[in-house]
Length: 385
Image (cartoon, rainbow, N blue to C red):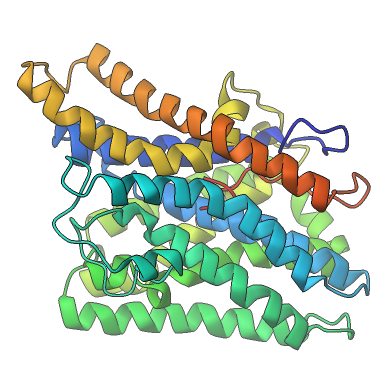
């Protein structure tokens, strides 16, 4: 991800998907925290799905890092994995958290804030409600928890056997558990987007698993994976069609609210998994497509994810005070640009030095490195998520 001599080549398809994910999030939060109107129409209303796309990408990228050595019969260096993850995710996150703590009465603050120790341990998403401070950190919590659980699962279920059978069983069971958790949470709140459903680790963790499944296919079933990737454009078409159908269903609570909540998020993740496979297929349009600026936006996405919302919230009162229409095209461009610029500054000032430090302490061999990380914390990754 950094400009080091040993860095592997970036995959344009994955960069395009990551750029799409952060663009969706930006539109969603512009709608919610700046214009407070459907500025981008239906696309803006489904902007929340950008996080789901980040989840799938993070599941693939992190799963690939962990499963590639397991498939080769090599021991997993858990200490190095956790150290690299922390150097990737914590500096940006704690820098933004410090801003929230230093400005408790500013426009960026919410109606309530969890204890600081919850933010330091990535547990604030438990019991989180809409309108609280730093709510967009919920997805980072789920990714950090995922980074803790997945390597332990790989060690316990794959170990030295090099057989993924138990891990496949656990993955399928976990997807089912996620659906069950959403169904039970929905029965309490009767709302597809109720906070206990939307922010809960138990209700959303399964969206990382389709990405892990792709990594398992790649590393443990390479022949089958190669056959799948031969149909890149079919994967792209199927992913787009499924995503459109499921997102329409979730937004319109079809066939009913319970079904949309229980199965909708998992199906959204499945559609994004198809798009991720298309991005990995040399024969697909998504693999070959080069969108100007997409690689840069993907590279900055984690920092942009962290910074854009407080920037949006700080700018809204200024726009209102000066009588500036937040729905005007120039205003949209300026505010969106400010959010991206803030992320770029965080990327240059905080993320870049720590990534250089990480490369110095834990150099990545080009021969064994999978696709360069650009995730959202994850983001992944990241936007990590």
